[in-house]
Amino acid sequence: MANQIFSRVHVDDIISGMAASIDRGPPGIYNLADDLPAPQNDVIVFAAQLSGCPLPPLLALEAAALSPQARAFYAENRRVANGKAKRLLGWRPRYPTFREGLAALSRDGA
View 1 (cartoon, helix red, strand yellow):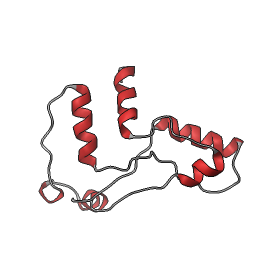
View 2 (cartoon, helix red, strand yellow; view 1 turned 90 degrees about the vertical axis):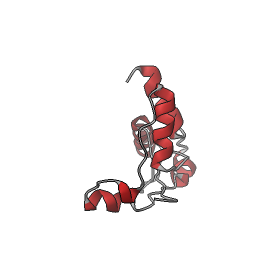
View 3 (cartoon, rainbow, N blue to C red; view 1 turned 60 degrees about the vertical axis):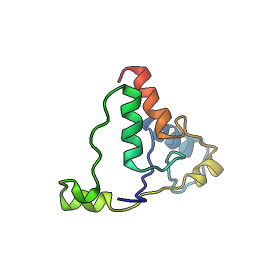
């Protein structure tokens, strides 16, 4: 879907954000997300380039054979702001975008 954006977060950044909220933060709810919400296709293209694999066919939402639940999920924007966690907890994601997170997986052999 055009202009469809997701926020993501690396599992290590979730853990560091949770630790910061316990150790340093005032009680509250904090959004933990990376700094680059992006379309799913951008992530797929980068992962294919990083791994040296051929790019899989990218389908428009309308062309994909998705369940109604999956179609509803992908039809929405899921952008999350992490500013509160940065300001109040001093939290910074170790992997500020999906690119660093995927590159770390590639380096670690995952």
